[in-house]
Length: 235
Image (cartoon, rainbow, N blue to C red; front, top):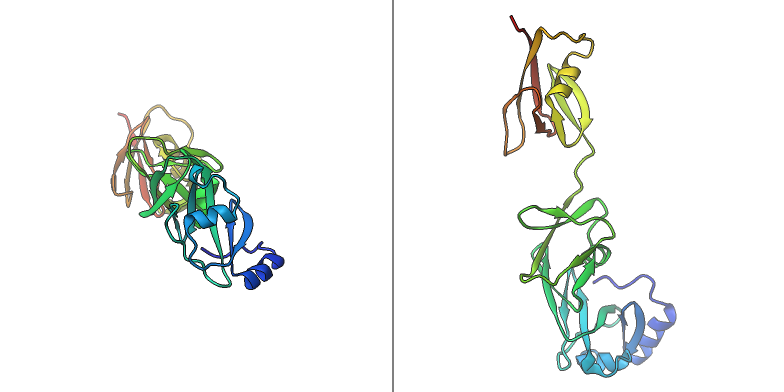
């Protein structure tokens, strides 16, 4: 875990004199032991009685619980970070296949992003049947029967470039309808009930790399997707 940039200089100086600096719930403390027990850390952070608190160490892209008799490795010149919860129950989940432990039945998207060092241009996704994107600032329950699995992925583009009848068009990301393809292919065509259009596509996504559309249908657009629209007289 990268040492907090906001650690005050007097704390660092005190840690240099006394020993080792650490934070609990973003409050700064110092201790004169480089491998204190979980009980020692709780006492130094004034978490009394110690047995009433779960202590979570924030590590590189993950977390782990520190029991009363477990040892924590503190490093000179760094500020180790911990979270404390007045609780007796531990919750587990993964983020990008790294194991996390937590002391509350909920965790905020902000905390996942902060401690998991998730960049702003990535979404956090609840991995499962529907791959639910966690809304910014939302709170997620960890109280289900199974450990939740989170992954991160780049935020989808808001627009993509496709080709319709040999011309590049920029369209909103998502689904594109048959009617939209026709209107982009023939923007100056007047409505004519005697004309129907045959619409085909290729270079789509893995689920539907190529195919055709008829009136009322739509398809997910992908960068570089190619469409062809051909007018046909009904008669």
